[in-house]
Amino acid sequence: MAAVAGRAEAPEREMARSLAEGCGAGERAALARAISVVEDRRPGFRELLARVAANGRRAHRTGITGPPGAGKSTLAAALARVWRDAGEEVGIVAVDPTSPYSGGALLGDRVRMAPLRLDRGVFIRSMATRGAGGGLAEAVHDVIDLMEGTGFGRILLETVGVGQTELGVAEAADTVVVVLTPESGDEVQAMKAGLAEVADIFVVNKADRPEARALVRRLRDAVGLGRGRGGGTPGAGARAKEDGAPGWNPPVLTAVATAGDGIIALADAVEDHRRSLAESGVQEARRIARAEARIRAEVRAVLEAHLGRVAGGGGFAEAARMVAGGRETVYEAAQRLLAGGGILSRDLAP
Amino acid sequence: MTTTHRRIRVLVAKPGLDGHDRGARVIVSAFRDAGFEVVYTGLHQTPEAIVEAALQEDADVVALSILSGAHMTLLPRVKALLDEAGLDDVLVTGGGIIPDEDAEALHAAGIGRLFGPGTRTGDAVAYIRTWFASSRRAAT
Image (tube, rainbow over all chains, first blue to last red; front, side, top):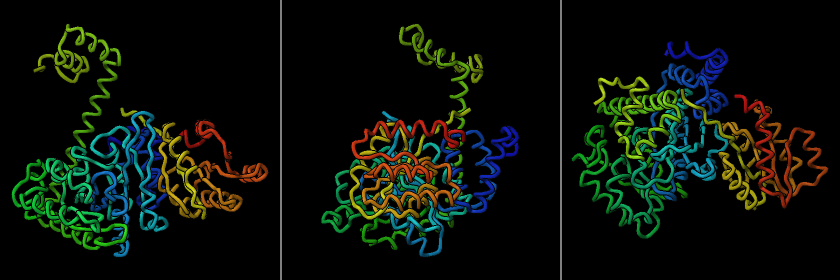
């Protein structure tokens, strides 16, 4: 970390130092500004993250995901309320999609979190995906780290409305809550190969509607078959095999988030899961897996940026013409560019 | 190594008691289409809640929609609370039914341009872009 710090220019170092100090002291304005620095990848953001990490604080990260309109924001707000009543401080990251056309975004999750508006023990930050996949934003891990380092012991991460493939939340959260509604019943079959596998806890929201019981039954059947991470028999998902808490069977809960029904039971289930992770040592395994995924992503990003500089737009454009014209294959072009960038020795090229 | 991705962040809020948020919704869409990241906070916001949200979201601009006639109290209150929170570099702008002489008085009190009925959304977008380009916030 010290080596990274040494490379930053003076004003950036000063910014990183003072924002990290502010975060360390629990200052909300410093946290807000720090998040922007990290989200925008402004100069000095790496040093800022290193300094805040040095605070050594740990938070439990709960992810809330599910299809659009399932009630994720309302549920997140209700859950935060329960934790606040227990005296805990809650950081909430709510992600909404960036428009691929304009680059703008409508971040509307605060509307449903109105009851938390003036609570000083809650910090809500809306984030746009800015082109990242997985239902999250690129900087979301970093933003959570900043909240953690500022002293928020509970983090709630609300994803964009997701389908089968936006599963980044499994990497970002310790406990994943998948929210469904009776209307999403038909989707459950399709979701077995996706969303359902990252669930540590299922919540059937809007459970006062008639089809809720059928959905609960179907989900319990699916869980009984060993789906979900850490189900008795390993499910089909890679995560289930690697880092599910042993003996943890994802409970299927019901809630009416707008009325506050079922929220205490949900908070209890999150707590049970947290304890199960800690006692089995899986918590540490998940942290390590998360760290590895983040390192790999950063290495990829740095390599790509490096190649972009070495080959320039022109290098790629020329290679593209060669490949399109049939004078070179995609693989030959890629290896030539990698070798030219000093990333791959010509001798070592496979 | 990594390029920065600065975006203009605008908090759109409706303070006060009137329940008409059609205008706010139109401007929210226009801002999004202009490439802004727009945090919409919904109806019936107190100045305190608006400022707390602006702080947490690190908003560059607070855009208020006021149709209730309470602009002479609400806008200066939001501005004062922002200043108090150290957010004196945040632009306070807005729209609604606001007489010219009121707008002038508010401008003298540090409030930005206010847009009346019939404003083209493009004017508000251009105003915010121009303000941002020369603001202290663009430099950070």
